[in-house]
Amino acid sequence: MTRARPARGGPVSLALPWPVWVPAVAGFGLIAVPVAGLVVRTNWPDFGALITTDAALDALWLSLQTGLVSTALCLLLGTPLALVLARSDLPGLPVLRSIVLLPLVLPPVVGGLTLLFLLGRTGPVGQLLDAWFGITVPFSTAAVVIAQTFVAMPFLVVSLEGALRTAGERYEVVAATLGASPLTALRRVTLPVVLPGLVSGAVLAFARALGEFGATIAFAGNLQGTTQTLPLLIYIQSQNDLDGAVAMSLVLVVVAVLVIVATRTRDVSGVR
Amino acid sequence: MSSARRLVLTALAAALALGGAACAESSGGEQQPTRTLTVSAAASLTDVYTGLGSQFEQANPGTTVAFNFGGSDTLAQQVVQGAPADVLATASTRTMQTAQQAGRIQGEPVTYASNRLQIAVPPGNPRGIVDLASLVGPQVTESICAPAVPCGAATEAAERAAGVTLDPVSEEQDVRSVLQRVQTRNVDAGLVYVTDVTASDGQVQGVDFPQATAQGAAQDYLVGAVAGSPNADLAGRWIQFVTGPQGDAALQQAGFTLT
Image (cartoon, rainbow over all chains, first blue to last red; front, side, top):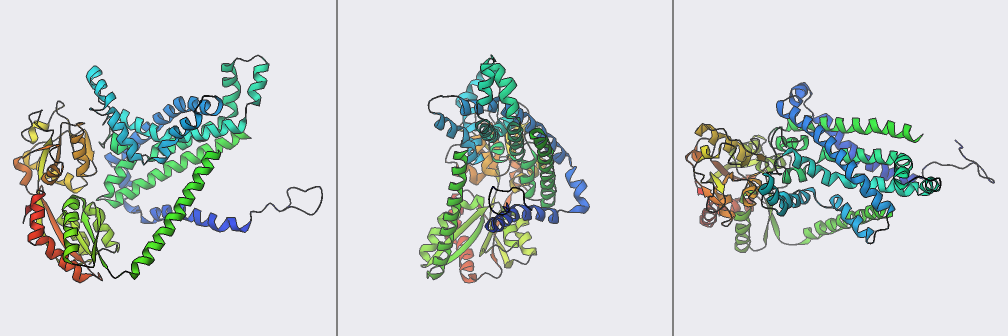
C-alpha cells in the first residue's frame, strides 16, 4: 500500500515498525485477558437474577446519577480551570497545575480521608456547616458526588488543556481583530474548536467517576440507595458472594464500554 | 502535554525499577539460611500476632515470620487458590471451613479465642447509649459493618436477638472503618469488637450489651496449618505458641476471650 510518495525515491512504507507490535500486544493482553476472564467466570444461568437484586439496581441507578452529576460539575468547574491553565499568564502556573493533577497521583482513599477531615463533623468546614445549617456532608449522596468530582476533574482538565494548547490561539486572534469581545471569542470560537477534547475529557471524567471506589467509601460511607455505588457494592459482595460481585462487575464493564463507544463515534463525526 | 508524557515515563521507569528490585530480592532470599514462616491472619489479629511474631522469632533463631493480614474471607480464598501460606488464622468458623472443604488445611484447626461486639462511643458516652435499642432513631447516628462481612453478620445476629433493627448511616467494609467513624466523631456510635475498643487506646469507650454473646454474634478465632506447606514443623510450632501461655497472655491483653 503506498499512501504518500516523496519527491524522489521509491514508495514509502507507513507500516508500524515491528518493535511496536510485541509490547502493544502484551499491553492489550494485560487489559483484555482479565476482562475476558470476568466473562468466563460469570455465573450465566443466574446472571439475570444476580444483577436485578434490589441492591444491584439501586447501586446501578445511583452510580449513573452521581456519575452524571459529577461529570456536569467537572465540566462546570474544570472547563474554566483548563482555560486558566492553558491561556492565562498567572504566576506559578506550573505549581497550580501540579496541585490540580494531585488526585491522579494520590490514592483515592487518601483523597476521601482528606475530604472527611475537611467536611466531616469535626472538620474545620464540616463543623461550621453542622453548626450553622445542620448539614452533615459525609454519608450523603452529595458526598458521593464530591468524592467523584475530586478524583475525576483532573481527567477533564488534562484532556481539555491539551486540546487548548494544540488548537493554539490563532483563531481567537482573528476573532479579536474582527471585533469580537473575549467572551464572544470564547463562546463562538474557542469552545467549538476544542469541543472534541471537551467531549473526550467529559467521557474520561464520567468513566472515572463510575469506577470510583476509594474516595467514596472513605468519605461517603456505604449505604444502599444513598451512598452505595456499584463499585462499593461489588467490593462488599466480593467478601461473601463472588458470583454476584462478578456479575455486577460485568454490568459496570458493559456500561463503560457503551459510554466509550457512543462518544467515540460522535467524537469522530465532530472532527470530520 | 509534555508534563503528561514525563509523568508516563516516570511511571514506566518506576515500574521497571520496582520489578528489578523485586527480582533481586527473591533471588537473594533463596541463598539466605533463614526460614520464613508465612502466616495469613485475620486483620483483627494484627497487633497480637505482630507482637507474638517477634517473640516467636527470638525463641526460634533463624526463623522469620511474615504476615499477610486481611479479611478472613479474602485470606481463605487466597489459600484455596494456592497462596503460599503456612498458617491460616481466621476470625470465623465459616471461613476456616471454606479452606478445609478445599482440602487446604492439614488436620483439625484449633479454636483458641473469641471476640464479642461492643457499642463504641466517644469517651464519656455523651449520648448516653446503654443498649442496641438506644441507637435506633434519627437523633443517634451509628455506623455498622456491612452484612456481607463477618462483623456485619455478627451485628445482624445481635439485632435479631435484641429484636431491634438499626438505622445506620453507613455500612462499612470492615470493623476498623466503623471504629474510625466513631474516633473521628462522624457518627455517635458504632458496633465493633471489644478488641477494637481496646486497640483504640481510650479514643473510644465500649458499652456492653446482653445480645453480644447471642448465637452468631460472638466471633470464634481458629488457626490451622496449611496442607502441603514446606514449613509444616514451623507451622505446628506457631499454632502451639499462639494457643500456649504466651499467646493466651497477648490475646487476653488485647481483649479477646480465651476458649
